Length: 387
Ligand SMILES: [Zn+2]
Image (cartoon, protein in one colour):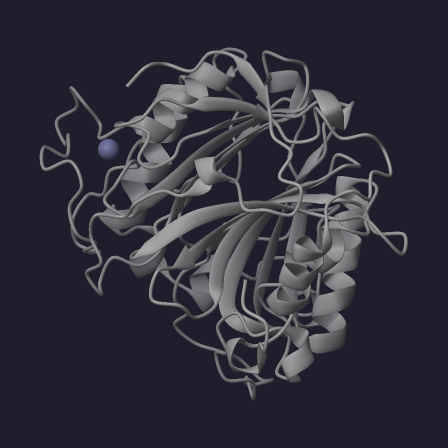
């Protein structure tokens, strides 16, 4: 496939962009989420601003993209989401606003136990707050369209979780603007921890919880803070069976090695963040997101195996429907996204500037985008007008 090195302008005018449709080649039931995320602080980045990398994984899914219109004080939002071919709700999305706020997430993995306040909320998948069953998929949208900075976005997300309760088991949100990045971990109910990514460090996470003990400066819910400074969040809610499983551990290890030049010992206690050996570029991140661990003793020779917690998983895998690297810029019109339509080992990254052709306050996105936004905020069975 020819390498697309030109910078193109993506303005959807309310339509899902044709570039956005990626084919999935396996729909086995076991091949659920295996997203991998990396975020680089501005002083660890070759650009001097925050860098983000993310592989979106989901079985039987395709990617679609839209531009949601501004209005009522809300910013226009570039929206890239994974949706099942078979219908049903959306499961994951990167959103980026014209004010320069970015959110993407990974499934945080299964929980092993709950404490005190048991979860009266069933796992409602991506049902919206409108369902009255807590907030889920739309948490990121409701925050990013209102926020002016990453920090403000985190505050809004926390306020929404406090108000409605989070209705999925766990999720790690990466919230960033050009100057700073945060990891916000939300557990079912009203539990959360948020930490600012150190400017001179890099954070990688697969599908497990990322916080062990709270640190000064963390934002945390009372039901976690009250357990004291030695409370082990990962250990209590998840345990090593999830975060130390080969399925997660080698993705964690290898992207640190390839993108940041830091070779961690598998099985050791993994830090929240590390200081990279060099300033990290978009190309460094792409190499990490493409890898099957070529040349390593544990190279995944069958490149895209089915999910199995007992085996080592590559970062580029059978369920990877999109790979994204985002070079954040203080001017959102200059923010550059590198996106693959499918697995990054098989297709080259295309280069886009979501707001490159959009004037501030542009309302010319059309009614179709509004309809999609309204539908998006409803449970699937309540949608009367399908996109
Ligand atoms: Zn691959």
